[in-house]
Length: 349
Ligand SMILES: [Zn+2]
Image (cartoon, rainbow, N blue to C red):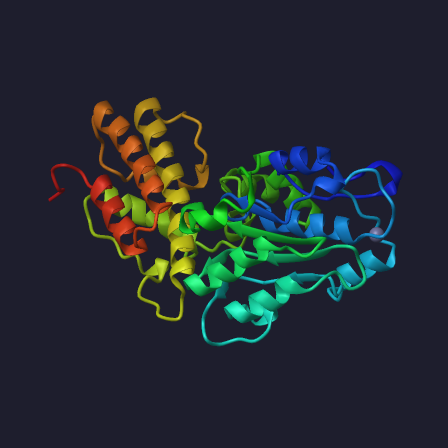
């Protein structure tokens, strides 16, 4: 969806549920909090930015979505200087000691209260986007809950997460949740082509992307030491009954917050689910079976064979581990449990 009536734009990929929701909602019925959930690299933050620009665009329009790219509001927004839009760049840790401004990505609960208490300065709206948010303390969570007791007019908070289960139920219940699914291969291809990637390479990367722009970029960069390649290799090792190195998940890295580690594990689980699915298809369907990640086929052929009953049980077990990862169980435990589920009953010699 790009061109809209009246020369307005709303340039996003996929995001079907969000488009349906914000495309039909009455502007007056906009709520104060939205929670965008879904895998990494499918456009949650991009949609949030386009929505923010739509709200801050000064060209009159019938619905909620759409911006002109010409008015002062749009000009300030595109330049990154609109006073009524604040965004965190990466993972936001709220509740740590350090940090005094939202742009430092480490907010204290007090910073959050201040950011949320301001009205729009030049616009009727003010949009606060907290990407991949993690509430490190109860104090921080309480700051957000307090905002919902008496939200200033026109202020909209958007949270994004790829680990829904790590957010407190009291926070989730204040937000309108909107799910983002993975992109289709065509959508990823179109995005890459627009970014200047030649058509053939774009198609190959899209086929291996598992519906995520960030993974497509990894494939393009040939970054097999990146998470996607490392997770496939880890899967093959675990399937052979070995204890593969999971250093790529940085579970022992003290500079990473628990939420960042969980996000890495969630990303790894996405890859392992695809690997397990592809391996099952290959094991049951043979050489011509269509794979989701055809570039990893050679690796799949190295995995020892199993009985059909074991294959089905394995797929169910991987799904169960993915559910476990959505809870507050530690990332390290999730990885160990996954490895045990994948290991063959009889360890290979
Ligand atoms: Zn505009």
